[in-house]
Image (cartoon, rainbow, N blue to C red; front, side, top):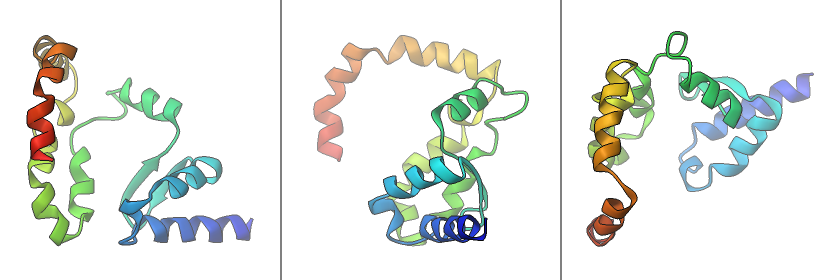
Length: 130
């Protein structure tokens, strides 16, 4: 038991490390195996790593609200936060941070505008940006 607790602490330290973003997959794989729902001291919130658990949460807005999910933004190092600001701004408002019925209304609008053919037409512009 102590070995497992120590291993999970090491994983949490790795979540908070500067090297984590470069290769997060081994940490997530280990968390799925040993602590699929994990309170991360490094991140200051719950980390849920199994697909079934994540989809169950997303389908239950009464228990798991989308409001305030941008808390992860505050954990990003300052030097990276400026570069990622447009993405973070989008998480603070609109569909990602809303619950039904507002989310449903916004999703309906987006589904009409973002079709596979329209996304494909945007490919050159997106590739130019990134």
